[in-house]
Each structure stands twice: as structure tokens, then as C-alpha cells.
Image (cartoon, rainbow, N blue to C red; front, side, top):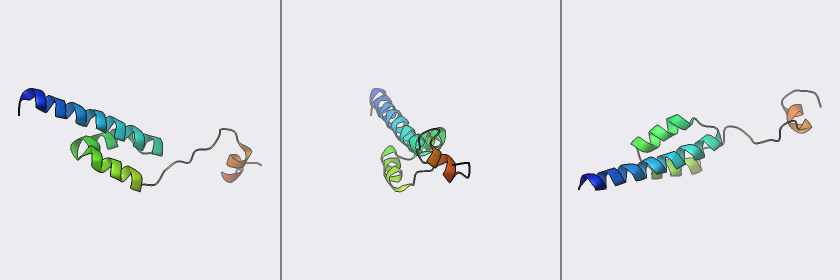
Length: 75
């Protein structure tokens, strides 16, 4: 393999790792941790993990009375 081909493969891995890390960040996981895992292991393996791992933080609208009541605040 030539140096240009190696650089191309590393660039593709880098871009796919950025995508995988941003998907995990949306689920509530650390961006840097999953970027490193994806870059060193395999981005496609991390996409499979993305489908299997649960969401850490729930999405709710800010200031909603139902969300505040669920957290133990006033209703």
C-alpha cells in the first residue's frame, strides 16, 4: 500500500469516528471517549454498539410542569 492509500484509510476512519462519537453524545455519553474507542477499534462496531446501548438522558422541554413534577419539584 502506498502512503496516499494509508492516509485515505486513516481519514475515512477519522470521519466515521467523528460521526459515531456525535451519535453517542446525543444519547448522553462522552464524546471523546467514544471517538477514541471508535477510532482505535472500528467505527462499524461502534455503530452496532450505538443501536444496543440505552439513552442516558431523556429529552424533555425546558420548564414543563410535568418534568418538574417528576423531578420532585412543585406541580
